[in-house]
Length: 90
Image (cartoon, rainbow, N blue to C red; front, side, top):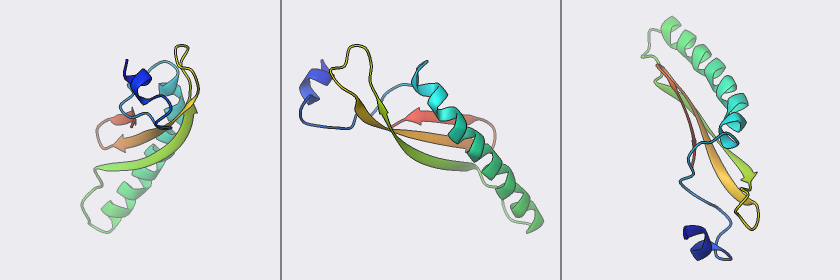
């Protein structure tokens, strides 16, 4: 229903949940951000600064579902946090 309302009016979809297609696309970005989070933590400890709570990056991808009439541009957020990771499609 929402897709039909936006068809022809937008080229970006917001609020998609992670799924078996989109979630694996986040893996390389999460791996990089985990490494960056670790390096940032090492620098913070060495400089006696507060540890970073998260390292985040946003990425533009194209995705199409079987029920969609075309591919749409989606924005992927890959966030490595101090206690857990948070991949999301914005």
